Length: 120
Image (cartoon, rainbow, N blue to C red; front, side, top):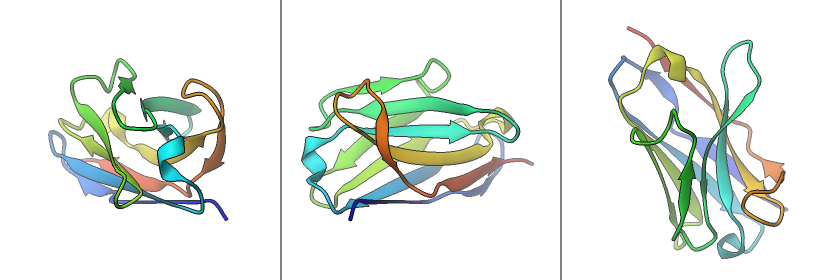
């Protein structure tokens, strides 16, 4: 069965960094775009970034551009999200999700999420 498992969240001080991982299994990893989506306390889901099937293209929300970097390792079936220059506004549960068909389309599978808390 399709599984996406996030890890790497935690408590970090403002200005700090974290690297999130999304380990995928149960499907042909190289055939699908993968997204990161976050949900801050009391707010809705917010798209963060998308990486194409082969990793050649990456897309970012405005707030993520220049601070976050998405990548994928096909040998490990894992997508990463490097978070830099974190601020308290980045506090959220971060989810990875598989795009159902095209990169810009909806998602059909989600991970359970990993909590990122930015606080001094």
